Length: 156
Image 1 (tube, rainbow, N blue to C red):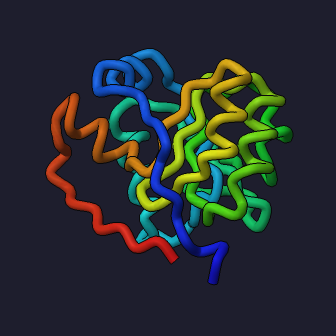
Image 2 (image 1 turned 120 degrees about the horizontal axis):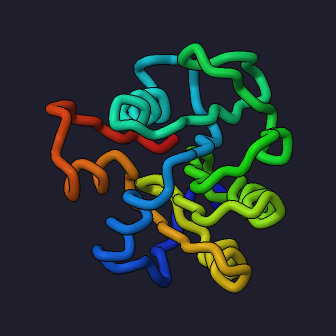
C-alpha cells in the first residue's frame, strides 16, 4: 500500500539541536497513544513519564490512557503543548502537523519509521522544529542515559 511506505527524511536537526529539544520541551502530546502496554507508543509514553515529561494522550477512542485524560485531537487540549510526538502512519501526518501549527506547538516529532517531507517542510516554514524517523525514547536514552529497557519497533 502506498500510504504505508515511509519517505526518507529530507532533513533532520543535528544531535545538539535534538538534545536541546529534549532538554527544553517538557509537555509532549502523544498522537496515537495506545492503552495497550505492549504497543510501542505506550512503552515510549511510560518512559517519558518516568523521565519527568508531562505526557498528554491523544486518542479519539479512549477517555484515559496511563491514568491520564486523553484528548480526541490536538485542538482539544486546553493548555500549551511543546512537542507533538506522532505514532500514526505517514498518510495521517499532514492534518496532525496542521493542528500542531494551529495550537502553537514548538516541535513536531515523527517516530521511528515515520516521515512526511511535505508536512515537515510546512511545519518548519511555520517556525516549528521537526524531527522525522527517530524514536524520542531512543534519542533521550542516547543523550541522558538508558533506563535499561529495550524497545523493538514494528510500524504497521
